[in-house]
Amino acid sequence: LSQGEVYYYYILRWDDTVEDIREQFPLELDRTLEIADQLGIKHPHNRSTRMTTDLLVTRTNGTLEAYSIKTDRSVLEKEREREKLFLEKLYWESKGIPFHICLKEDVNLVYVQNIMDVVSCYDPSRVQDAHGMIRYLIAHKKISVDMMSSLLNYKMLIDQHRHLIPPKLLRRARNTSLILPAVINKIAEQKGI
Image (cartoon, rainbow, N blue to C red):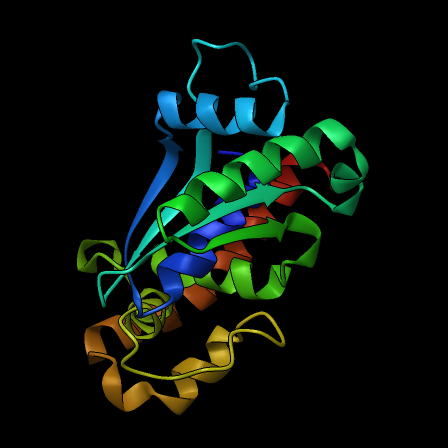
């Protein structure tokens, strides 16, 4: 996946109405050839290569949505790119499936970074300390936080939600916060920094 596709994958993964995300979903070659011929445009690549859609999403209500992810608006200025996107759009419309063009440049990077960070502890086996427990609780939406406006402040979140964190993990967080600066200072001293 491209960086933009990864960003939108995480955004969609975070959405509770999304049940499944399929990447680089192959389109039916016969249908895309038919549409290209009707439009009088060259089929992408060649007439034996299948087109793909970046992300095909299944919603919890069973509906599908197709997503094409592009880096920025300048891609849309190229006539050939517009032709290929139009072909892809008509393909999905012929199946009654909404088609979206999303731009990497429109992504809220703070939001994506926060999502990527908390879902890293979605699996309980990844929880090793209070920071991990806060990530786990947010990933499972047991606590609600603003994910969009700034990077998560885990120290503050631990203080606010300490009643949800097992004491063993709280002790580990305190020990880590005491040990980590000492370790960093030791490494810096060894490197002469």
